[in-house]
Image 1 (tube, rainbow, N blue to C red):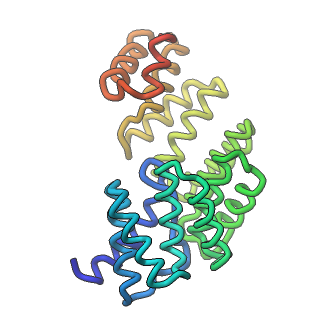
Image 2: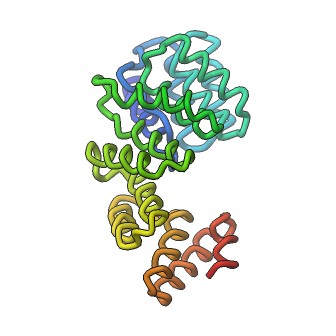
Length: 253
């Protein structure tokens, strides 16, 4: 694979890592330097990470850091990899190192902010996400706004969560993770028609997940559409039989 192609894959894939389905980070305003073996290893590491080939991804990212211990994007990507391995202390170490190296890196702010919110460190997480989403140089602010919305949901602040998610969708009305979160917010607010509408918008750009099917079944049941609710239930059990949502729905519907 040619270096120029690898460079494009790296920037694209690191951006995709913030989607939440396969992702969670954006490189923001910082670009990957061209040339150097550390960047080839970074590019390969990110590529293998996107394919969920974690062991070979880890090898390449660690080699990138051996070549250049200050490689911010290698720290950022390796932190995300450690998250996937449930090695959260190692993930935190790499996020903190990346932030120390470049406190204004939008991708690190977004990733580490999300990470902290998921660990229950809401104040510190929101501070980073607000900083990333409000930076005028951030041309993908919907990523941090969506993570901020998720953080607010975890804090049970539905109104604030909805405000962040609406801002995200104003910037990118086809951003699937934001639409998924809006489906949840609408359902939890008892606005079942809005939940149904957000699901339809989501399905226009992405495929069902266990979460979308769970909330879809609950929504249709609340609307009195029992036949459609059962269809969603059966689809959930068929497509995602080992998911937590499948286990829950057996006892609910």
